[in-house]
Image (tube, rainbow, N blue to C red; front, side, top):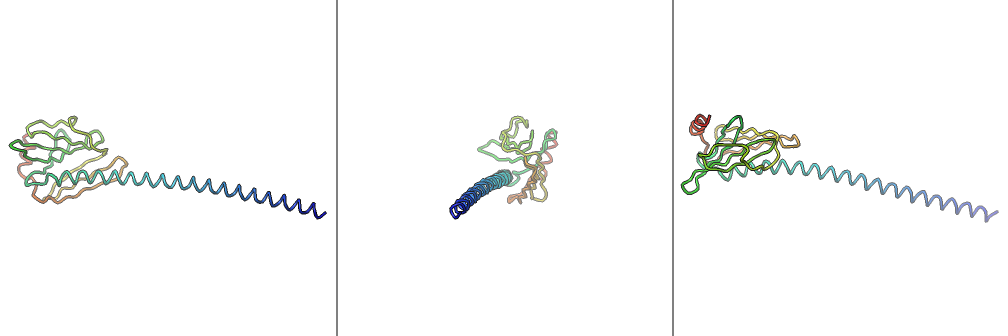
Length: 174
């Protein structure tokens, strides 16, 4: 009789160990799945933040690079608002336009006397909205990135902004 009880207890211990290993395997699998989902969410969130940071950094650095006396202006051509960054290289005057076209931020570098054509620019980053505003030497650019996040760049121009020249240029172009 003692042998039979010992065999039953040994069988119960084996089943208990087997169930315990099964629970351990199940919990390990669930832990890996939950960890993978959390990692994926973190990566997606990080990518969205990076897109917004790259967008604001790009616009800010372009403005800072060309910030000279009367070099930054807001110009509109056929309903497309642009940030016009004017510069002179040698004796030739150039302009770099930053603008939104077909859900992307574009950059176009050309001589000042060339007409603006949004299709001729270089696509830089996806952007849904782009709205620049220049008041009292402060350039504010409100944008919406492709994920729908609002991105605002506020830059105080160090060297001044175009006043009457901007108005004359816009009247001449329209």
